[in-house]
Amino acid sequence: MALRIMLGLPTDTPKVHAPFTAEQVALLRRWQAAPTATHMRCPRHGNVRRKSSDLVPDVSGWRCAFRTPDCPDLACSYTVDWAYAGMLDERNVRSLEGMSVEVVEVSFDDDSDEPLNVFSGHDLLLSFHEAVDLDWEEVAERSALDHRRGLVITQSTVLEDLLGDVILDLERPNDPEGRRSEIDQWMIGKRLNRVESLLASGACRDADRSFPREELRAAIRRRNELAHGNITRIVNKARPRPDGPGKTQRVEWHLVDRRSRESQLITMARLREDVYAAIAAYTNLLRWAVANPGD
Image 1 (cartoon, one colour):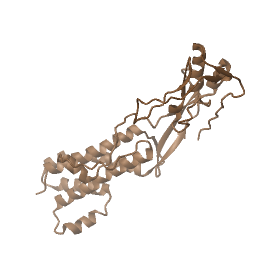
Image 2 (cartoon, one colour; image 1 turned 60 degrees about the horizontal axis):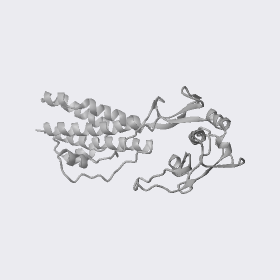
Image 3 (cartoon, one colour; image 1 turned 45 degrees about the vertical axis):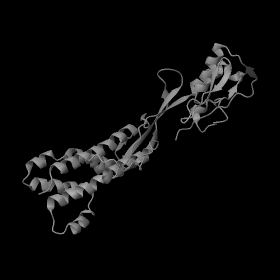
Image 4 (cartoon, helix red, strand yellow; image 1 turned 60 degrees about the vertical axis):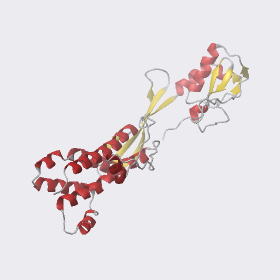
């Protein structure tokens, strides 16, 4: 865990009242940008909103630029017409910048506002047949890596039921319910292996060639990686910033396999791709099943 030292406002120095000069406004903006300094903030929003509660300096003083998502046109009226003299000291500001460490949240790299959703097999079936009553109840939360990992795993598991149906369709057992009870005990990999074995031994070569095995295997492989891995936070060593004073520090999340101990970077954007890949694998398997009904 990174240790961050925060320096408070220089309350031991006298207050300087607006109007501020352009040079003073520039210093105040640099103070507000320094992650090691306590910022001037609106008391109506406090630290809950973090950067969105920071006051913005100009020649006439400080103003709150906070907007709520629901009422973006409704501005906060909070203002302050003074600053501490210590905040206007070039040496103090330069010292803060020299101690600053920029924390780069590498794993949280998804800027999309589009929500992710987990669909049941029934939902995907309805969507495939263009039905209108698609269930949107299971809405994913984008702010947590572990929750989004759960989305990928949950989305991948709907393939199990469809693969079970494909097995029954190809086998045509005398006791379908009994056979389904047996298949329900199988993991997804075993189900896919059984489908491939039935296709390889069957007479319909076209169905075997068009079977989306690579997509399915990729989805299953990724599901197993996520299900059998631990998510670990890694704070890299702070290094001098190449583009200015201070340092930069990368914070990454890695997925570590519990068995092989192999580690890989995990990001929100990649997990989004994994969700879509699992949905595409299901859709293509369903499309194949409709085009190749059992005899």
